[in-house]
Length: 314
Image (tube, rainbow, N blue to C red):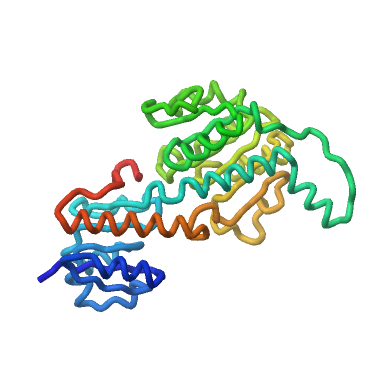
């Protein structure tokens, strides 16, 4: 019998056609995992989408899971017999564009002008920052951090990077350091951009001590995982006027409760975890192409791309 592939999630007709056209396999699709039949779960060898521990227990033959997300840090429980792959690289350019937008927004004080418009006030703000020549530190140099610094360097910024280990330094990066070495760079940076995975080592990395190492006029961006920044420490620092702005697409907790003080913290600009995802059509197309490519490889007995190291979480 041909191997069974399960594809979950809401997909376009063209994407479903691509999945169903995979050779030498049977394909079952369902928008929700709850709609899958027990007999299909029992036969499934490959699974596309978000999977739970309870669901995996119903799939004894499962050997490959393809995530539609880049984030994969919450799957440490997945049995080692199952290969896990993510959609690494599919969202990098779109998220980098979001980061450039928020960087320039904060440098040019655009949110404050928009608030002035709401109040019908005409005033000229000072302390406007040039992007060209600014120093940017990307904490995390995966596909997102690399795309952001590449674009930032093209606009004239001087870019630095932080990696778990120093290797493969891009030509547009002035200096590449480890997280243990980055404290020496923080006081010099105009922008510190976080695109960290949700690993144990990244949690709480930017606490009050590190936030205060940044200069008062610096901008903090976070598009990785909210818990990389200690929320209470950030609120305290912002209330004291220490940073120029904090642009957060991710936060801790998330979603942010209505009464949370982060909403009203001064110079904190929040977007609701929207920098990636399928909002840009090209992202979705890249994700589907990755999934189809990996399923083809696995069904041919070949290793897939973007395999997740369960110990690292990415």
